[in-house]
Length: 233
Image: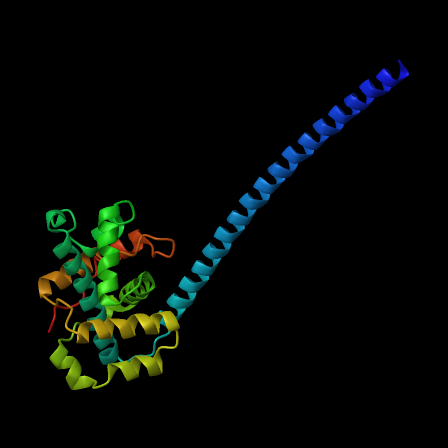
């Protein structure tokens, strides 16, 4: 009888321990889930802070540029021609959406939720040797200086400055901005750009920023379009 009682007590003790272990396991799973959730939030927050810091540095660098008016016009000309080039290439790949994508703004805005537009946009960037960070830099330059800049044709640019690459490398210290401007020059010099005056005005009146985590403010860029620079020379 004593043995039976002892066996029953032992089984009950084992059950209690088993229940306790199950409870602890559930707690550990919950803690592990919470830890992973917090880690993801922390990583996202860190990326957001890093992105904001990079944007602040970019804006500071753009506003601190010490170019003459002629040099600024030359850089602006490359920037606006690249933006026109990108818009034109997207429309070539999406002929059925031409009416729905009248400006570069509409492309950059709609690509966020439209996979087809986004895929084409990424394809165009790759073909031109550009990345989203380059577009952010070029858009930032456009916002900061486009209102006071003029477009110079390739012939006029050559009259003023023979080596624009050296000028950019020597005077632009922010790496993201330097890379964006240098790539803009490369795209234009390879003859990929379209520089029709009417397309230039469309870009100026509807330019916006990339719609990703590092994107510029869409409304700010759209408001910027109301101040158009002089027509192409």
